[in-house]
Amino acid sequence: MANRTGALEAPAAAAERRSASLWGDAFRRLLRNRLAVLGGLFVLLFIFVAIFGSFIAPYDYREQDLAAVVAAGGPVGPWVGPHILGTDNLGRDLLSRIMDGARISMIVALVVQAVVLFIGVPVGAAAAWFGGRLDTLLMRFTDIVYAFPDLLFIILLSTALRETVFGRALDGLLVVFVAIGLTAWVGMARLVRGQLLSLKETEFVEAARAIGVSDFKIVTRHLLPNASGPMIVAVTLGIPGAILAEATLAFIGLGAQEPRASWGKLVFDGQAFLRSEPHLVLFPALAVAIALISFTFLGDGLRDALDPKLKGKQ
Amino acid sequence: MLGYIVRRVLWIVPVLFFVSVITFVLMRATPSGPFDSFGAGRIAAPGVVAQLERKYGLDKPPHEQYLRWVGNLLIGDLGPSYKYRDRTVNDIVGDGIWVTVHLGVMAFALSVIVGIPLGVIAALRHNGVPDYLATFISVLGIATPSFVLSILLLVFFAVTVRWFPSYGWQTPAHWVLPTIALAGFPIAQIARYTRASMLEVTRKDYVRTAHSKGLKERSVVSIHMIRNALIPVVTILGPIFAFLVTGSFIIETIFSVPGIGRYFVLSIAQRDYGVIMAMVMLFAVTIAVMNLVVDVLYAYIDPRIRYS
Figure (tube, each protein chain N blue to C red):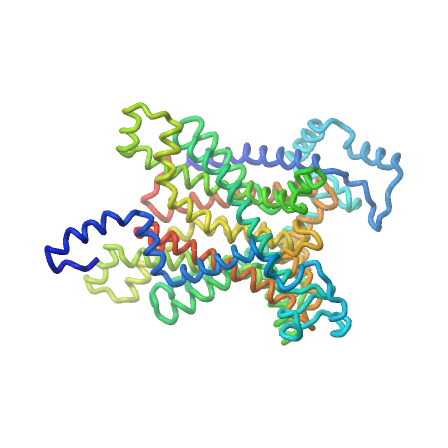
């Protein structure tokens, strides 16, 4: 970058600059951000455990080691014997249960963000592109969704649909995830609308219109790709919120049911043994904390990398 | 400005209408009703349920029930509770709401009093030890779900060192732990936001001008930087306040605080329709009003913003 020494090197430098795409540049900036890299590594670990957890977990998350519980006279403590993080009062390996919890949290992250994109992007894009009445109508609709108390809506919807096929899918988790998504898309819709409103006025859109490109193609091929940076950031920063919402719901007994082990449920179950066996609360709480921090750091880093102008904002 | 406020206030009415209709539909779509169980697994004879439903008008068509609910709401009657048969929904809300608001306001005050200085100090000592310390605290706040924070506070302050009681709301000592538990997340949010906003302001021309005309560091910071940096922070205070007043039910449950938060989940489990509707409407009103207050306040403290 700082190389301005000789004219001979200039063509090479220019070629290099040409090859540096927006994404390549952003990626390099991201790698320079130590917290973001650390967050990214933990996110990768989290994804790995979520996908392959059942193969690498020391035990099945449902398997009860009753002999160990009897020998210990209660939940087995950490660092003793074959259970690295100990067991719960039913003799189930805590590490394996936390790994299954990682899978639940990962599915939450995916499903919720899929719902957010699926609703938020079309709504935001339609509002920005067509403007006028439709814009007002859609934005007023987001006001209504925004005014709904999130957790109450999620609880209502998942209770209402519990007995249906949809309500039973994924051990009853899917409906909770979709409900979280239904409360979370508003931010994405507003973001997409704002981005597209300014992009709409650019010259390349005018050019595309002049040569007769259809509305749909302009939005999907020209506008949305140009808004993808902030959208990726919003998705990344939305994930901790989704994980937190699921953990909170699991803590109050909604969502994951026995024997599944969501992190929030592990914390709830561990409460009963808090004084004698605090590890039953601490380790799952630590898992939640690490996941939340990692996604937050990665999202912050992505935002700074994708838009250096915005560095430090929000 | 006045026209803008009037339009915004009027707009709250259709928002509440849609929120109440959606809640009503979802509630009625939920299988089983309020009289399917009478506690301890006791189940009433079919005739008794039918009679109870007739008494409360639940045998009428849904739209009639909804209209009757709206009519009663307009005269300030939230209807009967199906589970606490000796009390009306007005009683239930009236008993708990001030505790919930009290808790929410204290947590809000704590988050502002701690969060803003934390963010300001972090930005003034950018990349120094105070910055890292403040960042560390705000990361902790973001990474610790309120239920985990509550449990940790309980174990340490109520069980180990026994400084504060673990449940109840009788004396100011009872208020301490729930308030801290509730404020943990918003403190972190406000601190992060303030820090970013302060760093942004540091680079502004008017701050450089203030420095170069020889103003004392303290007056540059207090007059030029903090005042401008707090403008964007105000926008998140509204949602945070709404979140604190409406989102305290986990904290209320853990610390047995006698607010309305505990009815939040309970009423849905018990299909206590009147209480559910009351909760949703209360929270929707809070959120809508707080957003309006923030938007108006925003224009007031930042003269560059004009609503038409």
